[in-house]
Every structure is written in C-alpha cells, then in structure tokens.
Amino acid sequence: MKNFPMFLKMTDRRVLIIGGGEQAAQKIRLMLKTDAEICVIADEVCSEIQTLVQQERVKHWNEPVSVALMQSAILVFSATGCPSLGAQHAQMAKRANTIINVVDMPDLCEAMTPSIVDRSPLVIAIGTEGCAPILGRQIKSKIEIMLEPTLGRLVEFAGRMRPDVAKRIPMNRHRQFWDWVFNAAPRQMFDAGNERQSFSMIKSAINEQAVTQPPQGSLNFIVADPKEPDLISLRDLRALQSADLIFYEATDHHAVLEYARRDAIRERQKFKHSNDATNAPQILNARRDGQNVVVMTTTKLSNVSLQLLSPAI
Image (cartoon, rainbow, N blue to C red; front, side, top):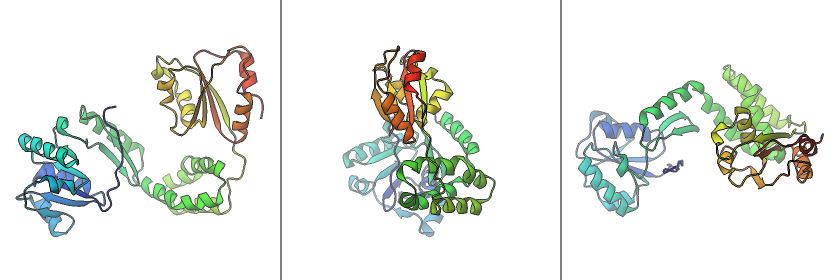
C-alpha cells in the first residue's frame, strides 16, 4: 500500500483550487460537500464557478500562485489542464509543505482523489493509487446499490445516541447493542421506511437497558495456511472480523490477521496438537465475558485438544 487512506477534518480549513475551467469546477463540486473554505485562483472562471462566487459559496482570487498562498491551505488542487503548470505547482507545494493533487497527473500528486460513496456521516472511499480509476468507479457503483440512500440518517442518529449508550448500557455490552441496532429490528424497520419507529425503538432500548441478557461469547477454530491467506473461507473471515481475542500459531500468520479487527487482542501460542489445554481457562473466561474467541492453527487440532479448549459454559 503506497498511499495511506485517511479522512481529514475540513471545518475551518482552506482548500485552494488553481484553475477556472471544467477541471476546477469538478473539484469544487467535490469540496462543496465539506465544510472547507474554498478559494479559486484564476484569471477568469467559468459560469458555474462565477455563480458559486456570487452565492458566496466560493472565493475567487485573481492573483499569482505563491508558496505563501499554498502554506495557508490544508490541500491544493492544480486543475489548469496544463502539464507544465501542474509541474510548477507541485514543486511549489513541496516548498510550502502542503498536500497537492495535480489533476490527471498521478506522478505529481501527494494525494489522490478517491471514488466516494457519500451517505454522510457514513463515507466510503475507494482508491486505486491512480492505476485504475475506472475500476474504482465500477466498485463505487456496486456499493451505491448496496447501501440505501437514507442510511446516513440512521448513522447520524446512532452518533447522537452514543453518549446515552455510554451512560446506560454496560461497557461489555456496547458491541452487542450496536450489533442489534445495525443488524436486527431497528435496521430492518429503518430499511422498510419506518424511520421514526426505528429511532423510537433504539431510544426505548437505551432508556430501559433492554439489551440485558448476558452476552454469549463464541469460540471458532480456524486452520489457515500463512502462505496462502487468500484461501480463507467466508465463514472463517466472518469469525476473524468479529473476534475479540485471537490465539494464532504461526509467526507468519500476520497476513491472515490483516482480516481481523484492529482492536482485537492477538496472542501467539504454539499448540501441541495432542492434549493442549494451556489456554482453556483464558478462553473460558473470555467467553463468559461475552467475547468472541478465535484459535488459529496451521493444521487441524486433535479431538482431545478441541474438547479441552472448548468446555461447556
């Protein structure tokens, strides 16, 4: 991965867009989705940009591009359509220590513009490091179909409820609660168009602490070849993505562990594959606390080991 994906806070931050034509207008349309201050630097601007200037949604500065001007911005777009100007702007941005995107010239870019699925505050960015933007747009189209257009309202409501959940729902049941919100009745009701009822159900569950049953932990055994991490099954992938505690055997299991949650606890353990019960107490306690446990080995454990590692709760 040559480019690291990250979301930048844009409120009260300045973005410079150099150019006044269609390329610049495209970047302005994108940045108008944010709270950034958008400043266009150009001798002349097209009618679309001029309208935005008149509406005071965009500022137009008719002045030379300078290093000092770039230093005032968190992000610069060079959208002139001129390769030589793009190269000059890239050099100036380096001196200004400012991130720049030179439109259609990936070799000069310090940042790439991804394909974006916007269900704000849920935002999905798809990047190909400038190698295959058409593929990125194809993937975007598929995700657009998967996610209902109004999903952002449910996500926004969940964000407003997080402080109440922190106060009323026990810490070890937060994940269980949010799983219920997004995978059970509230999400189903929301998807059916019953937004108010969905929100009311969530509020009632928080106020009444309705998710009161003790969370039930799980134990999954995965046999994974460290040299072929892409052969992992869909079932095992889901187990890894929901795991709170992972015991793994091989030092080079890290490629498979990339599929796991970043906050999952990972412990390397060499299993004897005969009658190994070394981790049985820890696994038992984790499951009692409602945690999901994964034991990942390179070969299948014996039946004796499986029985010792998965006692009844």
